[in-house]
Length: 432
Image (cartoon, rainbow, N blue to C red; front, side, top):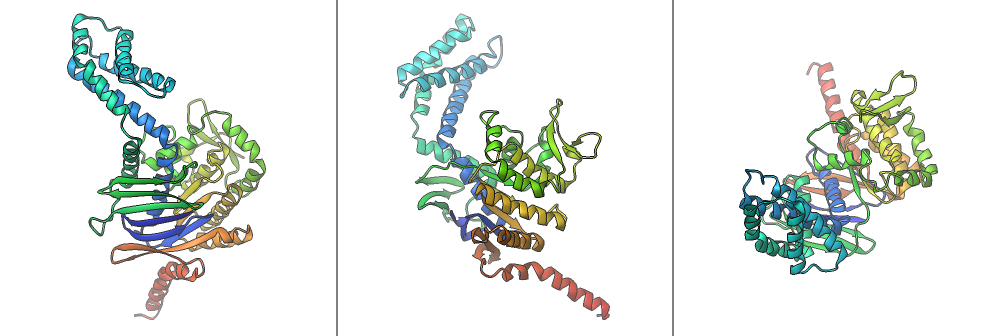
């Protein structure tokens, strides 16, 4: 897959090959995280887009019926709960009707509105008269919602998703009135999105997105599994996977683990050098790590930050949340890791790619981690599927250069602080 980015946030232009492991290095604030967030947003908003549009229609129907009935009936009195109960029941009734028929007519909607009114059983002449005042208008609004073109709704879904991830800063932050453009080229097919004024204005999908993207940048997400905390969209998605919400059937994970038993054994071997225990969810709903030599399981919140980074990978593998050919985005995974554990984590990344044919994007500032990725990709014979990019800021605009054939450019950038410290040391030793 090749990812093309133009005039998106701080990135002026980038062509990035995502085929195996893609490592992006560079100074802070040079758009490295933006690449991963674009992939996350593209894959997860477009995956199963038809179902997302379907759910969007149902939400709008429920919202419209609730507002209209509340405005006419009023929020007070013994009928105050009517608009809530009615709008929910109407959504379910129309959902059943739409599943049973290829096309819903105006009359079908009228009948559904009346049928649900009778079934809710809120009596009273006043309520009946008030409801009759809005029934025709409600029918017209629902009919219009059901006949909105999918293209319009798809753009709305994508706009909401990207705005949420990028805090409504999608278009260029440097040059005004430039169309933002992102495209994924996959097997001679293209998926392309354009944005204007931070809204999606065009969609081209030559193939269906079948795989998800998992974004990991926050080890503390494991602390949030059992509590009510504010989470961004990436953390919410990851927390859902860690809790097993992504599996339609509980047995899915069992079959996946059996089918991938040998692959998992190869990955768990280095992983278990760090996490010598099993993850469990106790009756109180909290997650714990049962470690060898400990009398009691250790609550996730009490684990070291570095250990939490490994717990996330272990949990994703144990629940079979990571599937073959998924996209995995690791934003500066080395931040909380000792150099020794950085090397272990790097080998896990290489083994994950090789075993599950994942597309992995990694951003890093660490020479240890970068070198470990490089060497382990050679050791495990996937160096031909590992690419390296240097992200740089020029005139406030980010560009990304493929430096796979000249890694010294990255090492030189990473070694600059060491040279500065050596200069300071020399000055101090020589009384300068």
